Each structure stands twice: as C-alpha cells, then as structure tokens.
Image 1 (tube, rainbow, N blue to C red):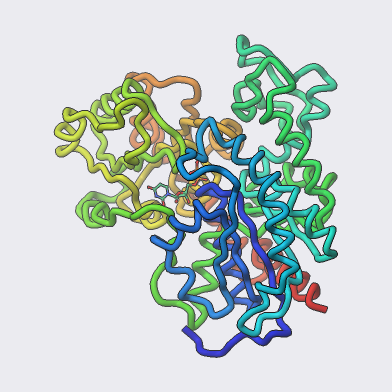
Image 2 (tube, rainbow, N blue to C red):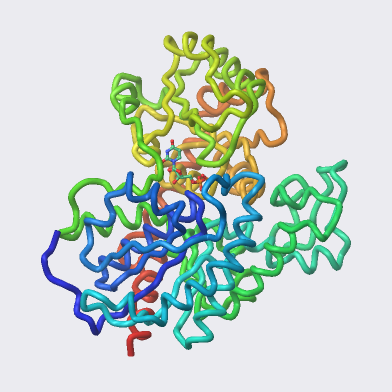
Length: 476
Ligand code: UDP
C-alpha cells in the first residue's frame, strides 16, 4: 500500500449505500475507484452491514484515504432486514438515520486524521433523506442507482403508467403489453415490470416508494449508474430527460479491476462480499472442460421453496450438463436443509457451495452459461465475461432485466414465472448445446462493447474522469 497520506485539501466524499449486498457491493467499488483518484472517502453503512463487512472484505486496509463508519438504522437486533421486510428498513432509516447523519456531518468527527470536512455526498437514489440533509448543510450531492437503468426508466414512467390506466392491474393477464415506457413499447409486458407492480392498489408501499423517490434524483448534481452506454443507449436517453447529468461508469467491478492493475494498490483481487466465499469450487472448475459448466446462483436475497429446489435439481441433472450451484444456507425456505438426495446425487455431475467468488467463477473458461436470478450485478458480471444466461427473476428490477437479456440483447433465455423440471432441462440444453453458438456470438459481441467502454477514451472511462473532476471541484 502506498505510504503517502492524501492531503487534507483533497475532496472528501461521504458514500452511503442502501443496506443490501448488491448496493453495498457496487458503491464500495465506486469508493475504491475514487480512492485511487486520491479522494478521501467515508463509507457509511448501517451497523448491521458494518459487522458483516469487516469480517469479509479487505477494502479497509487497502487505501489510506478510506474510512468505514456505521450508523444505526433504528431497527432491533433480531430484525431480518431483507426479503419481504425491506420496506420496514426503508421507513426506519428515513426516520432514525436522518438526524444521526446530520449530527455526524456537522460534529467534526469525520475530519479526524487530517481529513478535511465532507465536501460532497453520494447516496443511493432511494434514500432522499440523505439529500435533504446535504441540502440543509449546503454540501454537494450526487445520487447513485445500483439497479438497472431499464428499471429506473420504468420508475420514472410510473406517473404516465398510472395516468394511462396501465397501473395498477390485477394479476391475471400478465402478457398485456405496457406502452407508457418510452423505448420499451415493443416488448414490455405486465410480467416484465418490477414484481411489486403486481398489485391491484396504488397504495402499495413499494409502488409509492419507487415512484416518489425516483423523482428525487433530479435534484442532485448528477446521477451515477453502473452501466455502459452501448448496453442501454435508448433507455439512457429517456433517463436524461429527468436527470440531465448522468455518469455511466460500469461495469463497475471490471472498471475497478482495470484501474487497480495500473496502480501500486494492486495486490489481490478485492472482495466486497458480505459472506465467506468457498473457493474450493475454483479447483473443481479447473478440472472441467472448456465452457462445459452452467453456473447457478440466485444472488444474496432470493429464496426458493424445497419444491422449486427439486425442480431445478432434476432439470439440471437431466440436462446432462455439469453444474456449479450456489445454495446459500438461508436460501431454502422452510427447514433450510439441502435434501440428502440432492447432495448425494450431485457428486457425479455438479458441485454445490454456500457462496462462491462469483466474478472469478464467471471469468473461468470452464463456465459456458449462467442460470441467474438476473440481479443487476450478476447480469453485468455475466455480460462482461461473455457468458449467456438463463434468467429466473425473483423481484425488483430482475423482471425487466431478464426481458432485456432475452428480447433486446439476445444474450439468453427468460424462464420467469415458471419453475418446472422439464423447462429447466430444455432451457439448459438449449443454452449450453443447441443454440450455444448463437448465444455465444452475441455474448462475445456485448462483452467486447463492455470492454471497449472501459478502455482509454471509452464512455465509462471518460465518464469516470468527468465524475472525479466534478467531485474534486466540490473541494473548491
Ligand atoms: N455473489 C457472490 N457469490 C455468490 C453469489 C453472489 O459473490 O455466490 C455476488 C455477485 O457477484 C453479485 C452480488 O453477489 O455481485 C449479487 O448482486 P445482484 O445484484 O446480482 O443480486 P442481489 O443479491 O442484489 O439480489
């Protein structure tokens, strides 16, 4: 690690992510990119995230300008803080963390160690209370959205969808087209909208949250997105109408890897995982044939029932393909145990871990496909490695991401709203064998565009330079 301290005249950014794995992951990567550009960072997380982060990440020791801090979310210790109860977390933070944040930003505590005062705040665009505080104490603010731009475009269009009668709807005819989202008129259906839209009332708290908070992004100085221009051009044009200053700087994980390689910070790959990775799967992959393995993972939040798990397992085994499957200890609803027949029967064809080093797995040359829940990080990690996908979306932006993967980018197949062993078997065979060349070709092309965006003069590379310049300007 370089020994020089960043001068106290440097800009000092407070970054505050949503307390969810995907959001923390992306914003930590942004924090690292800014540290490399000699910007002091205070990375603020809730106490619940803090205790998990310090156990598994090496980011704290890597940069002299990086400080990790925590703040209470106001919820009791035993609260789940995820799944169906995430709305309680939003509400609690809105009321409890706001005053604590203002105190933290004004008491001078963050200036210790020769760091100047916070000159700018970057917060998840779903936490407008942070922007209220920044405005009150008159410091610059940027918003970041860690979900896909296509979902953001839908959130921005919610008032029009309500006006045209497309929202709310009852759950019946999910194939009804949606026409009020600019640029998506030809392929968007009810079933591709964020899962919380499947509600027959506009007072649904998630509809209210995403509709109202998204409009708040416009009052920040700029919007940072984990995306690249060639992937989402028309969608970005639409977001521009609400947020004229956009910084598309993704795929963030690959952008960081590239920047680290050229600095003295480079040592080992950085891990922002909130869970302990089981690296034994890497040696298992080493012994598998080129592009022969389908990697199966549904991210950090999605759960499956025991019946769904069995449908996936039978489908995977019957496909005849080798598979590497992440089954988190908390991912099976009910008793949570992996059935003995799955463990025993997998030995011949596959490998199961509780948590994998996913970015490395997707970059391994034995991996030829990804059965994913279409979380935005997972999607980008797959895109840049040129790995075609089968999408089984769970919630939030995943429903629209999977539609883009299959219908717009032609990078794979969409299995949403079904979970049947025959379909799993058929789709795995289609992706890994029958249409392998077709999908590999489009995946290679998109991977090439992703890499181009990160190269000198590429859109994500130039946008990051512009962001760094704009943040440095906040220090006067
Ligand atoms: N991930 C991982 N190991 C696993 C499964 C997931 O490191 O076994 C990481 C993955 O690389 C991604 C994140 O967890 O960066 C999941 O984020 P995503 O947006 O895909 O989904 P979410 O967890 O938010 O639903």
